[in-house]
Image: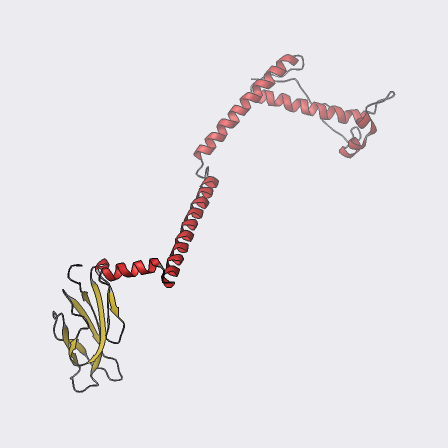
Length: 253
């Protein structure tokens, strides 16, 4: 086991024999050095206390690292001090790395930074997409070449519409030939604004003060349907209807 013979001078550090910190700080002989004559014992006791305390601390450090420290072996003290510092540093680094590797929050700050970078990237993409969308909409509103080209493509694909009380909107081949038709009619036969070409589904509803049931008699007619409203008693027996199905122009779908 390592050991040392270094001791602290004036361990008692009594006030009547030792300068306090304020006295020592202001002492003229501490600032400019001692002068011939009788030595100031309280001043020197403070001086030797400080020097020996530091020497003892260094000696204890060497002992804790496994090295002897004796006052008659100055060369050994220098060599052991270098070894002790290297040993302590290596252990400290090793412990820090181990703690780092075992910590779940080791890279928390880095991950937070990466998250901020990723979020910034997403915000930039969203901004660019929004800007592009706004530009495209503006181009359509300004009847630009892009708007004209888009209109031509949609028309060529079969898209058409008639936004009236009994109307329709056909979305064309880009949307599978989907067509939506609607209207408001009294009971009896109702002709679709455009005949369906494959199938259709209808929903009807009477609106008014009195409640009347409304329904469609046929389930597969493509050019129209018979609308029943209540007892079909008068022109007051009407209903609104909406129908979806498939319509396509020859050669498009």
